[in-house]
Image (tube, rainbow, N blue to C red; front, side):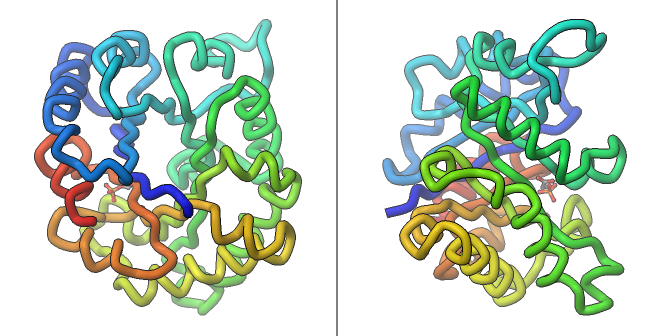
Length: 251
Ligand code: PGA
């Protein structure tokens, strides 16, 4: 049985004290959420050590939002996978569309980063998704298939146990425009079949595939009811502990 996960991506929001308060509020309510739904918060680098100590002993796991594409050394301003691991992270998000769009994150770089993250014992939440032009041109299946293949076909079935895929249509991120449950489900089913093509049906069945893009308490239940949607990667709504927990309660 694949895991259900609700993950909050705080992006570049909150100061350190605000992040600690948010983490405390999430932890305080986390016990109300179903035992079979995992909770993750992806905090900014500066917050990780402090947030890790807030999360200790709770079910909420810590993620980073990115990692360096080198192991260590003279890469000023970068944060390595070993640093993340030692700060208390269990996960890192990789390939978020904002990083692909603004920071030149390519599929090739994502292969390198994913290898480093897995090597350090971190799980990876790999984001994929088409932009508005690609969707309007009817290319969404093709774009997402390519992204999944370009990155994940470089890994083994064993490594796939530590990888979660997040489908995030770029046109739905932060826009208030959610993909309909049908639009999301058909892409999730497509991702699962692309995974089956390389790793076989069992690995595809066991891989958690999250939906992200304006997911909120009012639409989470309908999205999560879909056969191939195993939870959400939540941006804006994860900045309010009540909304974040409410989303996790939608299962
Ligand atoms: P959003 O962001 O929920 O604010 O649309 C989701 C994401 O980018 O992970």
